[in-house]
Length: 517
Image (cartoon, rainbow, N blue to C red; front, side, top):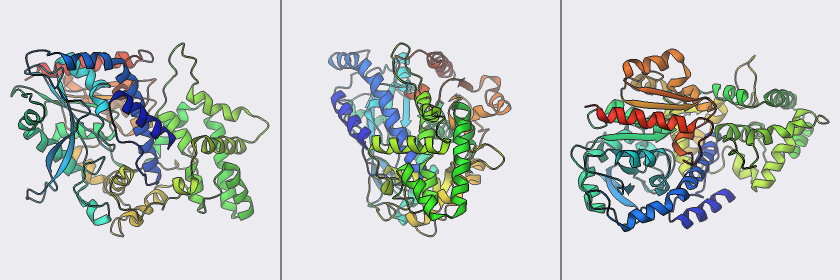
């Protein structure tokens, strides 16, 4: 996508070479993950540019009482990680690691970020909330790349049988195994000693936030505390609640719902002439499957809300929600025509090839490495689900009734083999980690209430939220005007809509946890 090429150039300009512009598989869950990668890096870049001068100065002079890191922060290191922790053997693969010890003081905390469903990026070392916490507490930031993402592969290709090592348990044990062996690894990599008294804080945003909370729960002796931003701690196959938050955020939701009602009647009619004429109106005539056509219409509204950022005060920048809803102001057209005009314009402006972008089976036979979207799709097929489906009637629908959990899971077997049937074992995960009520302490849970994923977080239920935070064992922070992982990635220069207040509370909580034995 064009955004990826622009982003790569910006990262190069900052000396922060991330992994962008991979080939992506195209089921709905995959497309959303791709957009999050682009969005998050943009926010990090905004913050990175603000701290780059200071970072360069630190690189030129010793700071504190330890030997400072002299190699570029963009330099990757490679840790020998165990391929399958349940197998009892020592077969390993190279797991990519990035390190920033420029603010580390002896005894300071170590903030560990598992990159989650995106490639590890050194931009996280100089921007974002973990970096801010490290600066404020004399800490070190370590990023380990999640297995099967970026450059960290324990297998030769991404064929179905080779995906079997991609499990939550293996990802969590990766974290624990790294911590147990981190001191000699960091010493060898950058010459800095991690003090025996340093406390480890697991951090993350979105899926990596879930890993941070679960790692604290599973390995309390290794991990002292966690900071978990926008963590979907409840696995759910049919995630229709996603759209209910989207509807609350969009003032034009009734127009979208009306358009979808008409569309569903057209698709129900079976009138190929009429259906094909509307596919042409949307710029989606290349899509043969009607469900793929209906599914393609979900991206704009989902991305607009999930990654919504109000324009900076005085910037004159357009408001993304107002821009989207502006398409429905044309009262001369029926809402379905307005939606068609909006979608066709988006496809043209973004230079999207609908056949490759929206056909649910496209890319299934490509088993080459470096397909982060394929890895995430496997995780949704086998453990998480997270299928963003149309809500059941009579609830308001912003997406077609053809956009079901079954439709989204159907390609699982095509991608990974018939044994992967698209029936993720969500109940097993929820039993193991507690779902909405994980048995955990010293975790800062943060959510933007405009984030559709908040419906799977601890903050969605007032009773659960209070139980999680009981006796000050945890902290639950909500931001009514913010969306997905806003506190984690958002540029530190933005102080409007409550993010600055949330960040002050996050820092206070982490400092309190670090003071505890």
